[in-house]
Amino acid sequence: MIRNSPPGNIPANSYNDGNVQRQKPAGKLKSNNDHHPMDIGDQLSFRLNNRPPPLEDIDSPTEDDASLRDSYTSRLLFGPSTSHQLSPLTRSPWSSYVEKSLPDCSDSHSNYTGLLASLVREEGNIYSLAATGDLLYTGSDSKNIRVWKSQKEFSWFKSNSGLVKAIVIADEKIFTGHQDGKIRVWKVSPRNPSSHKRIGTLPTFKSVVKKSMKPKNYTEVRGTQRIWIKHFDAISSLSFSEDQSLLYSGSWDTTIKVWKVSDFKCLESITAHEDAINSVVTGFDGMVFSGSADGTVKAWRREFQGKRTKHFFIDNLLKQECAVTSLIVNQSGTVLYCGSSDGFLHFWERERLLSRGGLLRGHKLAVLCLAAAGNLVFSGSADTNICVWRREGGGEHKCLYMLSGHTGPVKCLAVEDERRVGMAVSRCNNSNRVWTVYSGSLDKSVKVWRVSTETETESRQPTASAPSHRRRNSSSGQIFARRRD
Image 1 (cartoon, rainbow, N blue to C red):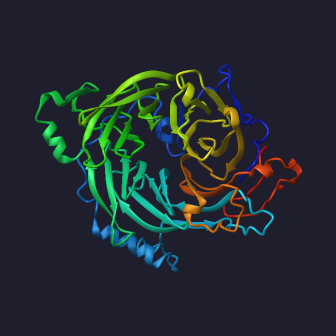
Image 2 (cartoon, rainbow, N blue to C red; image 1 turned 180 degrees about the horizontal axis):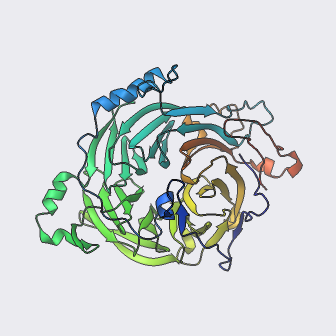
């Protein structure tokens, strides 16, 4: 669903004025199943305050249980049961609804932007996504990481840690960050692309034993002495350095840890914030940015000291009362974007990084996730919408579309070039860049969108020549397609 903001919505324009009146973020939500209030951070999986107690450090010995693997394999092979009884061996927890097939370029609507498909699950809410080529990895609170290909379930692998909060991919390795404070590393089998094997857990058992022998390797965490190489709360964010040699993990325990990808060693632990860290990103030639529930965005400079790294604090880019929920650096490495719980997007340009940046407003509730592709930035929000922003010349931003279709908060986003996904676009006008966008939500679904940017010729045409409203009924309701000027 693509639409203009209905009456009463905040206009989706760009602001370079810091005097815009912000909305006060709600402090509590109420569960439908419980009469006691619960923290909005727990519901939306970003922290505002009141960090949870430390979790157990023992890894489950049943993480690669063969019998469970056979059970889910049966679901993939045999599909939904024809019987009225829902057998766990024959009924897959996922259903795929194709909303729109890719239009032929001979059609007048070949520049279609909108919903392509919905992947609806019974397993749980979607908290993390990662896309590489024609594969999509989804993580949730169901303990399973699902792999999708051409909008169909391709494979899966399991971790008994529970909620999968972050997924990043480097070459043939998949790194997943979990609620229990651990990072698990998986590798695709060279003989069977659908088979994934866990090859490590960060920190490694060997490293923990070695560090525990010396008192100097202990640090105080919430009044208790802990080994500095371990996270003691949920991992909220994972990010690679530009050359993918280092992995950064941000946690609700207020620390950033730096890992060497080649041997899984923890090189450094940075006590970065006064409250939970919600996002960590890298960019700008060795710089690292962290966003926290304490309302700050901090910039760090990386330096190598022999075999180790050392990060130095540079400055606070932002300090506000509202929690910082997400960060992203655009593909060209020129702009840093920040989403916050008041629904605003902040951005800083590389050339003027430490000076005051710009402000975008297009959401009514908290911005929960960001993604970037080309000159586009995508923001997903607790208001269930996705805004598509385009950076124009001179640093101005324009909201091209608002994608609507989810019934719950949009928690994660991933973007791939449509040509890498394997869709037939060669017949189309190559000057029109097309992206495949994946969005995961707390409505237990993943939606697949097609986003087409206007060509230079089309942008000069009168508004009347743009495609008009297009409506059709589908499993997710009516879909409206309208370009936003």
